[in-house]
Length: 319
Image (cartoon, rainbow, N blue to C red; front, top):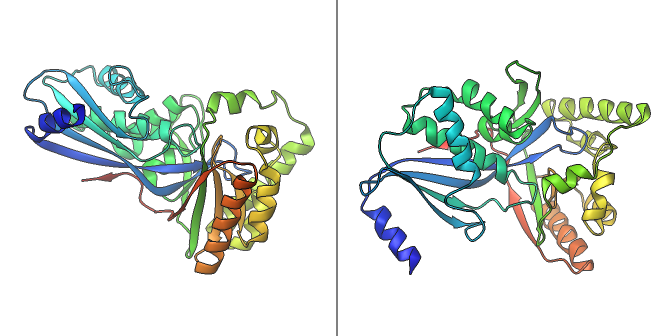
């Protein structure tokens, strides 16, 4: 009944713009808090005029529709920061319809998509005074606190970057290697970023630091030079995955089976609970890896959804 009312409200108002914001997978093993890639799974934000009110009203469908508040959410928080930066507020009402396809708390960048969506929406409403690849990008990085989700969502492809205090985000974009596909296994349980971060140690050994530095350097080099056979060693990690393994039942066995099935690499996606496998665009390998991921979770009595995705070189889409 409520959906019918909402649809009627929207149908009477003019659509102004649509933003498609992609999912992302951060870290890719060794590139903790610094490397991330884009996935072609999109949340959509549709902005409509609101002739019946001077307020910003939200309609939310899909992932989180029963969990996300329409009066207090990450999109609205990000919008308020744009109002503050531009020292302006909307002069009329709008309806913001969110169609969410990125699962919440699964390590696929749902929070980043919300932050970016809010920044884009407020910027549009106030006359597009902020640039996407400078102002919006830097605001998003500051809000998220680390760059490896928001930057690929905005820029597309694979991003390796560094945040320095009071400076613009420094990054290199790597175009997706030919014939590279992403397979994501999404288990049916949440894992909050806060919980996953709290599991990490405050200090690490010099030996582990060298281990990750060498592999993160190899990771970006392998991706940029299309030497994908190096990804197995390049994604090895000592900073975060071993500490988070306790939250994902059977993780080590899953990694073993997915590599055996022919994946170039397999890692926790972001903070988890999803798993990312990078594979050759080969139907037989994709089938074997997908089955290995699903069966590994099933052995622990965990249901999972498998998505075979592209890594698009374009980030946000504006329609």
